[in-house]
Amino acid sequence: MGAFAERGVISPKDPTPYLWWLVGRASGIVALALITVAVLLGLTMSTKLLRRPGIGRTLVRLHEHVALVSLGAIAAHGLALLADPWLRPGVRGLIVPFAMSYRPLFTGLGIIAGYLAALLALSFYARRRIGVKRWRKVHRATVLVWVLGVVHTLGAGSDAATQWLRAFTLLPAIPIVYLVVLRMLGDPRRHARREPPPRAAAPHAPQRRPALAQEPTS
Image (cartoon, rainbow, N blue to C red; front, side):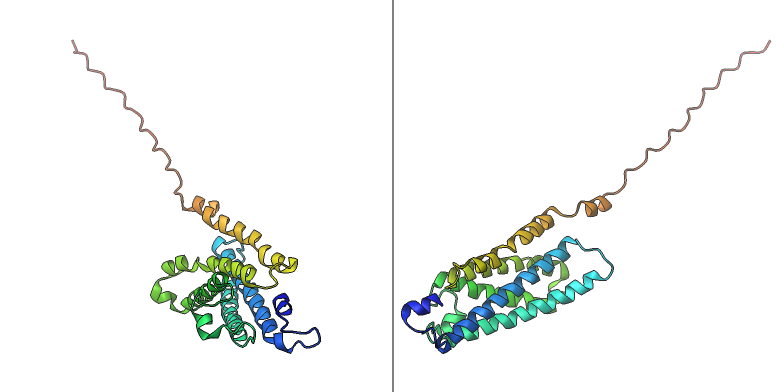
């Protein structure tokens, strides 16, 4: 909002000119929140921190729904910016990375994050063709979507200097980094189960006493 006030586009009594800016910022923040939740759910499943019966299927369904809803928020974010009378990015500025005149680096990273989020979310329905193991490896790039989203939010947002937005975007890094490190280290209990038990040494057969030579009889 500060950028609009500096250019004299808005007045304190008339919020209409910056309505689309408010919608764009709100939908972008919602999209980042949903992506953060999706990343936390995915890392929780991959690290197997929750081992209750049936919890895995519940987390998978929740992860899928959150990812799909985040795509809707990303689309709403782009459409609201397209209608913004001050930004005026144009269709090319919204779909081509780094083509927007307003902070092209950070807006371009946001566009890349949106494409990557759509690719990873929709790949869930093609995981059988891709192969489950290969799909899981590719799906780890979801963390990259979150990183790009954070950089985009802090770099392109006109209110990025506010403390609440910085706390909102950066505080989730603590559990996310913890879960990423935990996933990289692996589960020691799982590795312990995979290791075969040591083979017991075969008992030594008792050695036979050599037979004594018979003495000649007289």
